[in-house]
Image: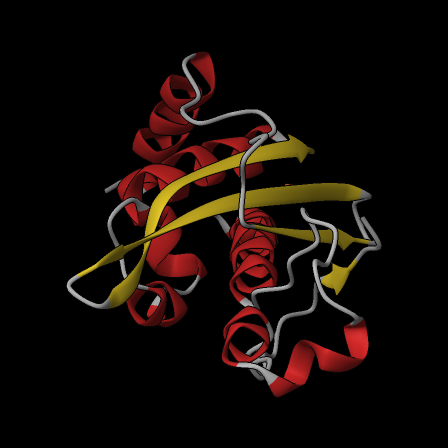
Length: 163
Ligand code: FES
């Protein structure tokens, strides 16, 4: 696939971005920023349970950034629907941007931003809700364990922003 094909697909995606906007009933939200270009991506996830597994029911995003990040986030949020948390954790920026074709070197970090936002959201921080139990109890219950799984370490250059 040539880089102009990729460019065309990016233009198509941003002309009609999917799943753009804040999700009011989200279970989790992840935010990353890139200090180099000043862009930021935020992703919301809503989970469901299917055959005893936690699956992504829907995903949405906001991008205060470049067109490539918007295009990748649009593709990624479509791709994530119905995936288990484990399957989503396996996806890297290349997988998430695959429908667009290979990103040019200058734009690789745009896809990494989307991966970073996804990973942050998958950590399961319940930033969207007020805790319903004293925080000292949160790690001592099954619900607390489900809501606060051990973070997965990553090697991304993007940084977590306070939401
Ligand atoms: Fe920084 Fe695309 S130029 S996210």
